[in-house]
Image (cartoon, rainbow, N blue to C red; front, top):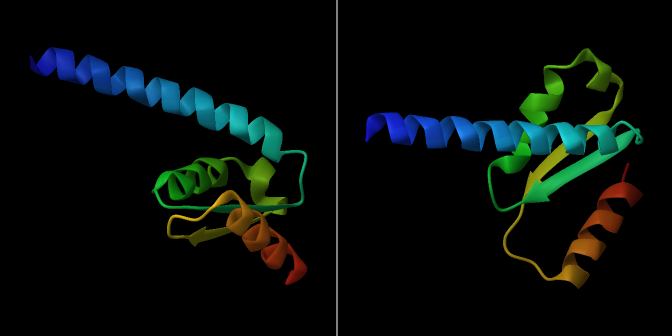
Length: 84
């Protein structure tokens, strides 16, 4: 049972790593990035990006939010980038 849990955990970590790598590829196209949301994923992605010196010249902001609608998300992002 412990072996099964360990395998599942490792598989989940591999999938997460692949997803962060995919996001990193998109982020390389931008000078400023704003990560926000409810979960800790934004912090984990930030830590993942900070391991790579390539992302040191990219400004990455992080902010936790409550549950918000699509319109609120858009206004939130617009407001963030207007204040840079």
